[in-house]
Image (cartoon, rainbow, N blue to C red; front, side):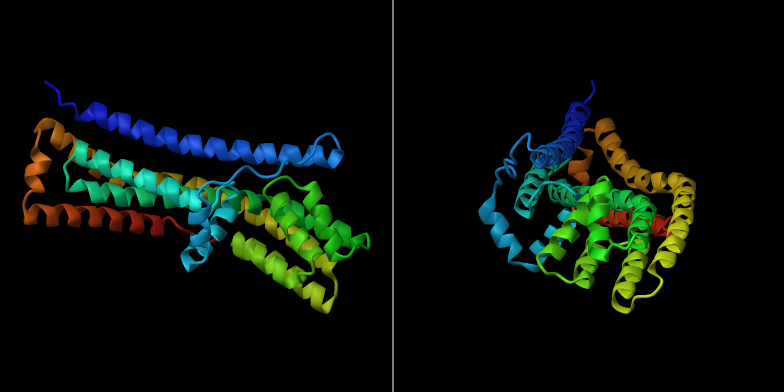
Length: 313
């Protein structure tokens, strides 16, 4: 008779996947709605109703006073998600508690804290994945951004006006990020500070080169048009090179994620073949040390494979 471990495990994993997809869909829908309301408000067809009502405001205020909260807020703003640090920490806490309880019920009480740590890793990994995906989209738009700035500068527009025009013409995420830069410039922020904050939100070599070119041109003047046109060609070549490298390393990246999945699957297989085996294994100190060492080795293997597959272009 088959154990009930597999159905429970499948339900828990399905709930986690659906939860992550639900948060992602909700955030994208909220961002699309905000963009639609903004366009309608500009055309006079509708009034901007503002942002949605925030939850966990007290927790959000406490987090923003800490260094961790400020770093978390900067990272969330780079993802483009309409989520506050307080809401993210609350959702991560619920995920950790759910995985903790599921690990204790499905495997053994010893695996509860380990599953809780996995929940923290999943939440932060989702945030990094959204941030990296947005950075990639922004990098792909940099050649067009450089081309627009070169044309606007050649037409005699100041750099502030060129950035504002690029914010209106480009789609998200470049349009949204340049809109923030334009708003900062409108309230008196210097170009150096506004562009420097943009490079800090979306760190990449391509953006750093573009920001450095614009800052130097703004300070010293010179042939900014020719510099931007040369930069446009360079960014186009780097875009193609990055795409080829990412395609070549796709199998290696898949292997990095397959290694820990195989380890977890082996534990579930052992518990299914011999019910109660995990309880007996983690009932002694030696078994607990062996499990922790095994998980640590899987983490080390994951990190090493990811390091080998990371090629800076």
